[in-house]
Image (tube, rainbow, N blue to C red; front, side, top):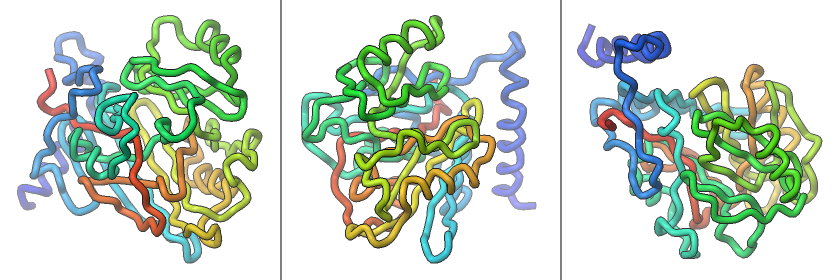
Length: 300
């Protein structure tokens, strides 16, 4: 057995036993990345890249794959992290009030992302939505047309369907755990799957839902386990998936998933691994934000 194979087995065993290890008070907690959005993840280890489709170190395991659905290429990224601080966001130019858009690959490299996906383009030509990034609330202007995704400080996903300011406030006051913090939020949607079941109740024409398009979603599979799912498409809406089909595809892929949430697709679609897009995008544009997964191997 060569050294790379042995290292892979040992780290995989470490990740498997990590929950048991962390339950022991005699052992140290894993490294925690600061909440500050200006602080990037740990630099990636060269030896962590086990192949062109897999990265593994003591705090994160990422795999990527392409799957054909008929003649349609789809891409799936599976992520497991050791600490909730490793699911993070980054804004273009590191500022809320700067509407400069940049390449997703540039943002991913800037923050040492192992894997990343575009966000909800909150800096675009609109001023609605609930925007929290790395614990800082920037906007609370929900108009009842979109589902909101909330990620707490344990890395767990929550949602508010067709959120208004009133329904969002009610959720945060009465349903969101009192001892938890909102770390990141997105206002795009809709919610695509809940507890492994496709959810189509809030799919409206607002999302060009009936057209075949390039789509992308973020999924919580379990505690500190996630996936990014993307289907390719064309700018003329002749190739890709409708939102209902995309929701059904994700539910079939992950019948035990907790929540799947649709992000900005079409020309905004970016799924990044090792600073490279792993899919085609014929209508690619620069964007304003990413959600990313970082290593914390040298965090304190």
